[in-house]
Length: 146
Image 1 (cartoon, one colour):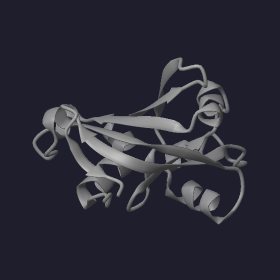
Image 2 (cartoon, helix red, strand yellow):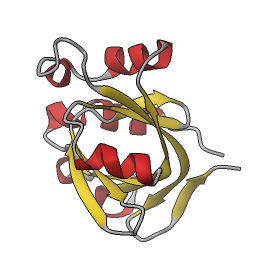
Image 3 (cartoon, helix red, strand yellow):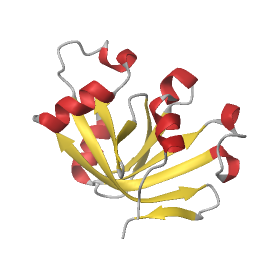
């Protein structure tokens, strides 16, 4: 079962201000991987992350082609607070693009102000990541969807 802890919520929801921006791993339909920094990745609910895609470039195209994604979080400054090996947490999940609706508006409200400022007209796209597993750097599965 995946139920993100308060610690994980705090780490992700303050990642941008802590200077520990999470990285989004995507893959095209033919398997070419890509890593993109996403300063807007935050917790949407107990088992879902979200972010605001304002560039609309290759990362969004890859999510459209292949919804399987990975979020990589590392914050060496908080190593003593993070119970995971190497202060690294990997989140695996399936992405869903939201171009309209209440959940899109919720994502907008959740992301850091610094990520909203470059898109004052809200032209971007919200993306939800329904988590399938959460792992330590060692590969040890900490949480898994039933």
